[in-house]
Every structure is written in structure tokens, then in C-alpha cells.
Amino acid sequence: MGDNNIKAMAIVKSEDGMLDVIPDLHPKIRRSEVRNAFQILQALAAQKEPDSEELSRIVEWLYQHEFYLTEAECKKANELHEQAREKRDRRGIYQWPAQPLKPHPLMNDSYFLD
Image (cartoon, rainbow, N blue to C red; front, side):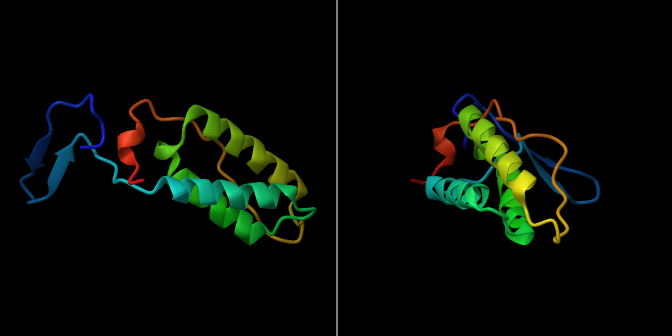
């Protein structure tokens, strides 16, 4: 289990045969995946006109993996995203999430493989 504070888990089978695991556990990922995403976002923020598609792709990845980000990483990602978003190529269509990234209270290093 990913969180050392959780002492029990339950598997619930509903009448329609669906199984649910409580609590909802997050898979382990490599810390390097988060570092790589930050490197890409930082490079995009440094560009004069960041590519809208690439920015969208990396921001989507970060939102999908928000659980794994620390408070400092969320803050930095939000800042870099804002910098890149302000400078992006105006010709591309770019939509971004309305809510900034925020850390998850249950996240700890046990969710990393490396």
C-alpha cells in the first residue's frame, strides 16, 4: 500500500459485480517521470513562444499526476505554466485547467519506485 498511515483496506463487491478497493490507491511511479515533466515545462516557459500542443500535453500530464507533486513542485509548476501560457504562440488553441495544481495530503515517498 502506498500510504503508511492506512492500516486497513476493503474490497467492496456491489450487486452488479463491480469491485471497489477502499481507499483508492495510487500506483507507484518513478520520481524521474516528475523530474522529466518539470524539465519540459521549464524549457517551454523559457521559450519566446512555447508550442501550444506541447504545453497542453505536459500540463495535462502534470494534472493527471498531481497526486505525486509536493507543495513546492505544485507552486513551481503553476508558476512555470503561467509563464509559458502568457508567452505561448497565439495561433494555437490552448485551454488550461481553471484550478492550480495543489499537493495531496496523503502523498509520501512510498509512492515512488526510485
